[in-house]
Amino acid sequence: MDLRLAHLYPDLMNIYGDKGNVIALAQRARWRGIEVEVRPYSLGEWTDADWPDVWFFGGGQDQGQDLVGADLAGKNGAALKRSVEAGAAIFSVCGGYQLLGHEYVPESGPAIPGVGILDVATRAGKKRFVGNLLAESAGGQLIGFENHSGRTYLGSAAKPLGTVIVGNGNNGEDKTEGAVQGKVIGCYLHGSCLPKNPWLADQLLAWALARRNTDVKLKVLDDSDEAFARTQAVEVARTRP
Image (cartoon, rainbow, N blue to C red; front, side, top):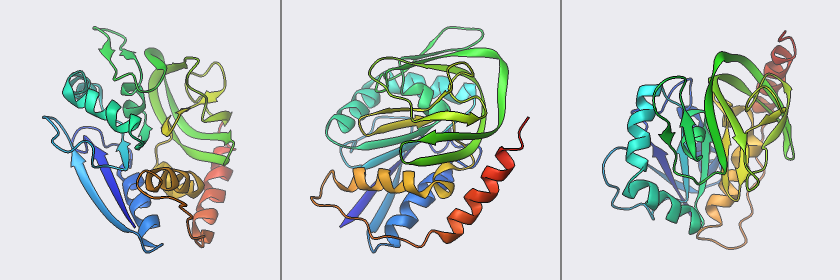
């Protein structure tokens, strides 16, 4: 069994430790004896968009989002959609999350079209949300660090990833954090997310491996170090004003 992991726009969308999500997915697979290959996918036509089992799409600055949005408006966006329809999973954070939606509307300038894989839309707000973010999800608590001015609102096809306990989450209004639609996840959890939330990493691994395998059962790992780190991060988050 092997895992094919794609890192979307690592040269343009890779801030606040987001690469750690790629490292965590790969390492948790290797600890289970699963071979892993990681490939970057950036600007320019992709020749093998049907290769990945799981895609990671991180956050970036507004200028990077302009370039990426334009790139996804063409053949690459259509290829990413086909990949998801064929069973690939996606984990996205912040700017990547926004661009998987219908559009991102900046405070000034024209809207940046999204690829439309997630039924969400985002517009910029005047206040920036910065700080620890804690949310309750069906699989367990999620801890991370948010740093965004975007306000994301979910349509009927997307479901919240979690309910905010501490922080602002999607928009600071409705207590939702992130979105889940099929095997696609978007969130505002930087820091990076998956090393501190291993249950979510394993959910993504199970989805990804099921694309080309049947009866996928992940070996249980010793997550005591991860649990300790989570506990410390949660304690810090709960002191947030």
